[in-house]
Image (tube, rainbow, N blue to C red; front, side, top):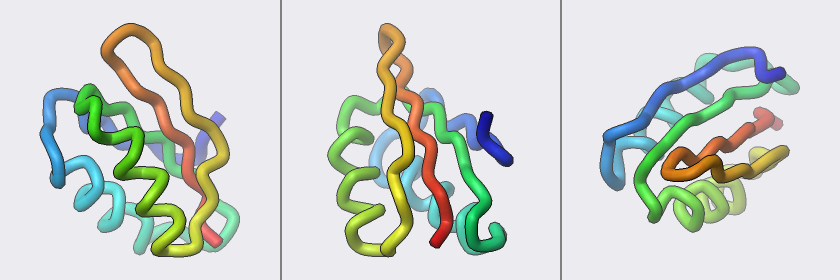
Length: 74
Protein backbone atom coordinates (compact mmCIF):
# COMPACT_ATOMS: atom_id res chain seq x y z
CA UNK A 1 0.00 0.00 0.00
CA UNK A 2 1.28 3.44 -0.96
CA UNK A 3 1.98 6.19 1.57
CA UNK A 4 0.00 8.81 -0.40
CA UNK A 5 -2.63 8.79 -3.16
CA UNK A 6 -3.31 11.19 -6.02
CA UNK A 7 -6.63 10.82 -7.85
CA UNK A 8 -6.00 12.17 -11.35
CA UNK A 9 -8.93 10.38 -13.00
CA UNK A 10 -10.60 12.47 -15.69
CA UNK A 11 -7.54 14.67 -16.20
CA UNK A 12 -5.73 14.76 -19.53
CA UNK A 13 -2.06 15.19 -20.30
CA UNK A 14 -0.10 16.98 -18.90
CA UNK A 15 -2.17 17.44 -15.72
CA UNK A 16 -1.60 13.98 -14.14
CA UNK A 17 2.18 14.39 -14.49
CA UNK A 18 2.16 17.98 -13.26
CA UNK A 19 0.12 17.10 -10.19
CA UNK A 20 2.29 14.06 -9.48
CA UNK A 21 5.45 16.16 -9.81
CA UNK A 22 4.07 18.66 -7.30
CA UNK A 23 3.10 15.91 -4.82
CA UNK A 24 6.44 14.10 -5.20
CA UNK A 25 8.31 17.27 -4.17
CA UNK A 26 6.64 17.08 -0.76
CA UNK A 27 7.59 13.46 -0.11
CA UNK A 28 10.57 12.19 1.84
CA UNK A 29 12.97 9.78 0.10
CA UNK A 30 11.54 6.26 0.23
CA UNK A 31 7.91 7.37 0.47
CA UNK A 32 5.49 6.20 -2.22
CA UNK A 33 2.75 7.93 -4.20
CA UNK A 34 -0.11 6.04 -5.82
CA UNK A 35 -1.56 7.78 -8.87
CA UNK A 36 -4.93 6.85 -10.40
CA UNK A 37 -5.38 8.14 -13.95
CA UNK A 38 -7.71 7.55 -16.88
CA UNK A 39 -5.60 9.24 -19.55
CA UNK A 40 -4.25 6.43 -21.79
CA UNK A 41 -1.11 8.50 -22.44
CA UNK A 42 -0.26 8.33 -18.74
CA UNK A 43 1.47 4.96 -19.18
CA UNK A 44 4.28 6.38 -21.30
CA UNK A 45 4.20 9.69 -19.43
CA UNK A 46 4.93 8.12 -16.04
CA UNK A 47 7.63 5.85 -17.45
CA UNK A 48 9.35 8.92 -18.93
CA UNK A 49 8.75 10.94 -15.77
CA UNK A 50 10.54 8.33 -13.64
CA UNK A 51 13.47 8.12 -16.05
CA UNK A 52 13.82 11.90 -16.07
CA UNK A 53 13.50 12.41 -12.31
CA UNK A 54 15.29 9.31 -11.02
CA UNK A 55 12.24 8.17 -9.07
CA UNK A 56 11.23 4.51 -9.21
CA UNK A 57 8.11 3.18 -10.91
CA UNK A 58 7.34 0.45 -8.37
CA UNK A 59 4.07 -0.75 -9.85
CA UNK A 60 1.91 -0.19 -12.92
CA UNK A 61 -1.52 -1.76 -13.23
CA UNK A 62 -4.56 -1.28 -15.46
CA UNK A 63 -8.09 -1.99 -14.25
CA UNK A 64 -10.46 -1.21 -17.10
CA UNK A 65 -10.03 2.47 -17.88
CA UNK A 66 -8.14 3.28 -14.69
CA UNK A 67 -4.35 3.12 -14.66
CA UNK A 68 -2.67 2.75 -11.28
CA UNK A 69 0.94 3.76 -10.79
CA UNK A 70 3.03 3.60 -7.62
CA UNK A 71 6.12 5.79 -7.58
CA UNK A 72 8.86 5.79 -4.94
CA UNK A 73 10.78 8.99 -4.31
CA UNK A 74 14.53 8.42 -4.47
